[in-house]
Image 1 (cartoon, helix red, strand yellow):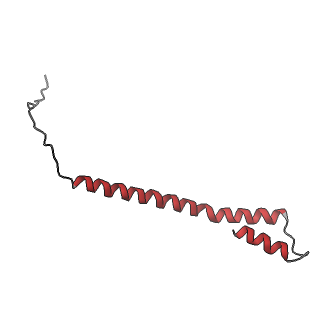
Image 2 (image 1 turned 180 degrees about the vertical axis):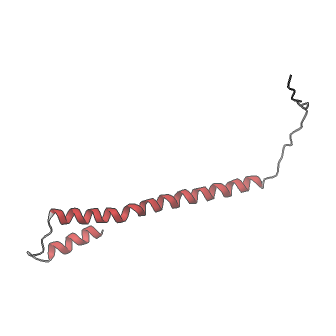
Image 3 (image 1 turned 120 degrees about the horizontal axis):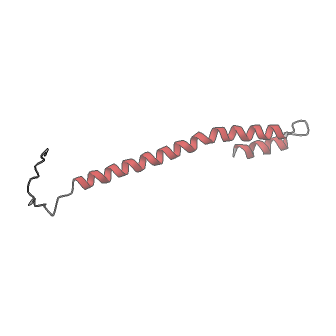
Length: 82
């Protein structure tokens, strides 16, 4: 968006203010340098939000009542070093 605004202003200012290829590359790299960390912040926010949602679901599962109880009929296993 900033790049488009810069191009419009630069093209309408007259014949003495002409944007060179180097100026265009400079502005483009400046914009990319600004927007790249913002993309990472969005990714980190999404991962954090999903992790918190997963923790909330896990806590809801831990609060569930147990319908079926396990019966332990297995004999105790005794370890020997023979």
